[in-house]
Image (cartoon, rainbow, N blue to C red; front, side, top):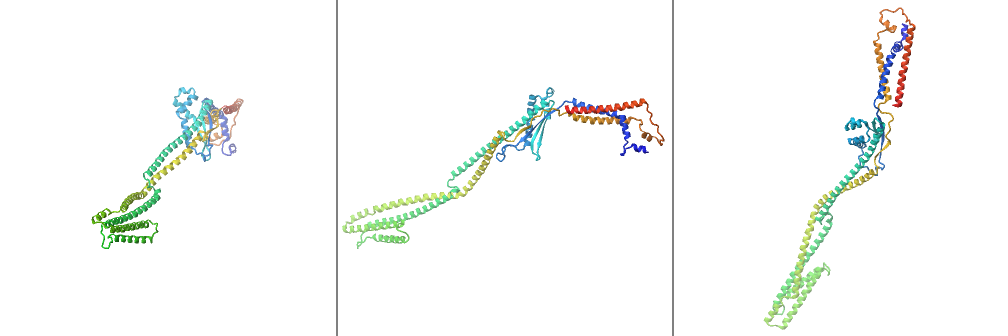
Length: 530
């Protein structure tokens, strides 16, 4: 019982049993392991190598600050890069690269152009590089080929395409934006010119009815009304003068046709005296209110002077008539020829002309006043109409000014893009020349082969152990017997058995040394030449 405890490890594992399995089955383990590793390792050298060339392209920000010149292209780099990638991976571009660089050699005869394009798309890989803010700062371009020189040439061509395409896309987008703004600006200019023409025509059609002419219209209307009042006053005075002159004419005719009374006094003389008294009373009343320069005072004085002259002339005629005492027939003829005074007739005609002039002036002034009153009545309507036109003009002008500003900024941005001072791609790492194939990774294949060999060796060794029904340990015998074992007969080894056992040990060590040395040598060779 004590011996059994000594043969087991503290963890309960029967080390003696497992060591015995290793001694018996080491060849069953080593040979499958070596074969599995050798098979996978050999496959890594049989498979066609694939070389991958790569380049790093940096996304450089514009050299001109955005505060001075605002770019007029799409700022979403990821969308633009995706669009450029789609253009580069288009069938036309890839067919041109295939025809120019011939990356697939003899395979072109076996594959159709579409199959070659699909193969090349799978061989191209674009990897974005982002910063801590998840912004794209650079990107890698990879191309895989069976020839390292071809891989490098194709990668170089793809790099040039990315750089040139980015410049063309940005320049084209910038020019398209500027052209679009120029077209919009021209349309806005035409709209603004139409608005200006409408306002100009509106002002020309409604001269004097504009809101800005309200004060002048009111001033002119007040002046016309004052002139109308003066003309009406003058017309009334002229009409009074006409009545007065007509009365004098009538009185003069009556006086000329009258006969002398018993005392020699004419019949018409009292009427002239009454008229003089009346005129002098009016003069006294006006003089109390106005000065001698007042037009009414001066006119009244002239009428008084004319009346007094007429009275004196009448008295002189009467005296001459009394001295001569003509015959009745001659007196009648003389009276008939002097029924009117030429000076009085002239005054009456001048009075009629004056009345006609005042009436015409009043008609003209009334027409002008009605016109200015119509203008004033139309002013609120014109103000509203002009406000609508002005509002449309101001909106058009604001739109025109905004488009003009944007067009100028876009033009500056286009100039910046044409000078290649905008955002651009720059090669940081030129296309690399792949010295080792990207596939297969022979060192990795060594590890995989070693893992497969270990699994295969364990399976084969375990299978042989399970199929072997021989007993190699006293503990196994004790488990089979129902009774306790009193004694054991030790193994009796002869010289031949000892030699066989020694050869097996040396063969095992030699096999193990060969296997591990070969695996190490293969791994080292894969690392150095893979």
